[in-house]
Amino acid sequence: MTYSQSALEAALTSLPLGTPLHYFERIGSTNDEARRLAENGAPEGTLVVADEQTAGRGRAGRTWVTPAGSAIAASFILRPALASSQLGVLSLVGGLAAAIAIENVCALRSQLKWPNDVWLRDRKVCGVLAEASHAGDARVDWVVLGIGINVSGAPPGGANLRYPATTVEAASGRAVDRTALLVALAEALADYYITLDAARVVHAWSKHMLWRGQTVRVDTGRQPFTGVVRGVSADGGLVLTLDGGETHTIAAGEISLLRKTSEVH
Ligand code: BTN
Image (cartoon, rainbow, N blue to C red):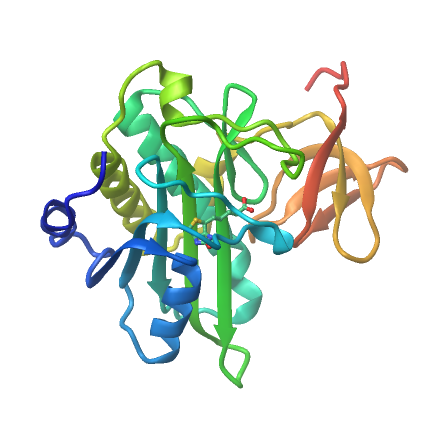
């Protein structure tokens, strides 16, 4: 089913994030459009939504498929009063908001793969692409928080996928109203973003953490790390116990499961 733009606008209008709404039946990438709007001074809360993306982008230069009528592709423009070094917690908020929205609308318990993928029943259902522009004084000028949720239809497949994918409907076994899910996403995002209380974000995020106690590899673009996942630090980093026994916190990277450990925590 396609969106009703007027219904979406009406539902978002009372929320702190989601207005003005820029809606497209089809677009290359909502993040690209949101970046363009942000560069041109669009206010905090501006939301770009598309029914279909023809050039959706994922993390690490990967592509992200958004077929018409079956997914959420949404990019929020945020203008947080943050130093660039404080962006780690904000990056957690996108995945947390999607997890909460899925729980509230579909009564499904989800898990979060650091930093911001949402998984349902051992499969990825949502990804977040956070992109920021930094002012000269190391403060953030704008952040575009792009969130993609597979809602219905055939789950994305193909050799390019790093993990098996699912949709919210496949996991819940029920029809899901995309508009209700998108509005719940904007609500949950506002709930955690407006105060941006790092301790509250990390506490809520940690309850969903995937692979805690498991051995993972983290690719950082420089040196890879291997260790057991312990949790998330106060500033949103991944806390590992490395093979040598020391504790190490990683600010940014791609995590993959190496092996399940039988350690008791
Ligand atoms: C990932 O897991 O690699 C992140 C995927 C992010 C996809 C969303 S869909 C809305 C927004 N527009 C894009 O082009 N990408 C993000």
